[in-house]
Length: 339
Image (tube, rainbow, N blue to C red; front, side):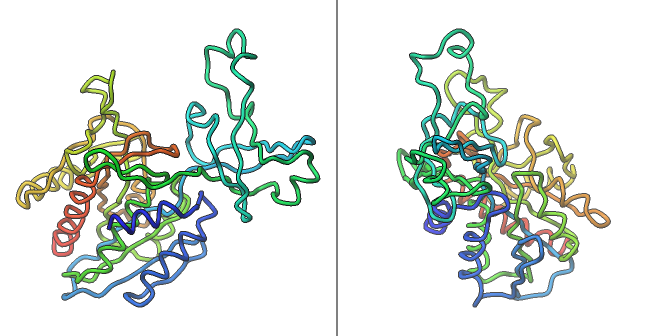
């Protein structure tokens, strides 16, 4: 699963531009299960298990990552851009990026610090004040390599470091995709549906379309969530802690989760000796927001990986938590199959 996550994180795929991620996923599942691609671009897979379940269970994870998109090419060859998904401008300045289908290298630039005065010294620059430098000297030169509407991605290596830590871009949510690929590669107890979704970072758009096709009774949304277990943050504001296992939410900004499913996840994890923890802050959101209210409603739970520095080019996860999320996802899918 770790090697699969590495391969996935090194692929570029912002919201609406998930094609390369989709092609990779299809190459891994095409001989192992049935699949289709819907008009949204979701990959919907079905794998036979050892038995037919009482309930239809769907696991989902989104293929897209946060990034940027080119909005204008300046006369001096610099590129103006805006964000695709929620990105804090404080993590952007000076970052190396890759632009467009030609994979043009660039750097996100800003006014030099010794030229900043007053409020410019005290606040993070807004994205509309930044630019991408691709080394072009004119608009005409830049237009040979990039176009308005081109996607822009963080350049980030996949690095293992410390005690069980990994660093990469797009852990949110290639991690969830890696879990589903591992499950498809295993011998499943029950027939199971898998939805590799698009455009989560810009409004959870792929989830509802997938539900209308699959019509599941139960859904397990695999995600990455904010871990603020860092220096200077109080226990009550940490959201979740790396190394303490899978994160299960009772509520976020877009979903109030089924209380019986929330409590049941903790009971099952205790029975199976799987490390688990609650998400202790009502924040963020994920594809559960679209999935749980689609069609006539779907019993939905979110299982998340604690992820530091999320929505940046240097997100950090923990291998032990990855295993806990995998084990809990398998256990829950079997539980819901005959609930």
